[in-house]
Length: 96
Image (cartoon, rainbow, N blue to C red; front, side, top):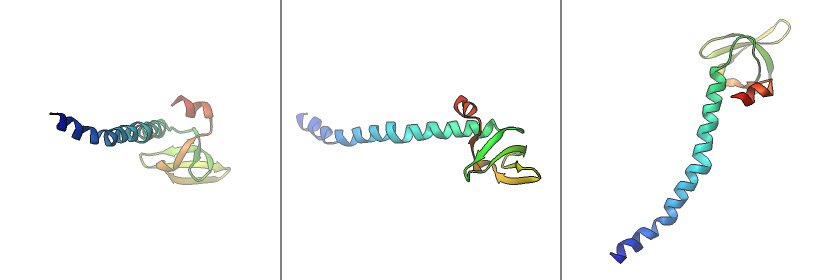
């Protein structure tokens, strides 16, 4: 039996590295993705948003995949819902 426990101890560093990988990389990424999904699900007409390209605008209409924003007077842009980076209002971003 002493040989068996010694063989298992060889794998201890690998197991520790996998646990560290999970807690420092995978879990935080999953949490950020869930927060982003909550933000995208909470979008509604009239929200002031920022896109991933840095465009600021107000949502005019919204569907499952498309958002139409008003960027300036008489300027409406059609973007993918996934292109929304967040709200212009920082308190609303932090509330999610």
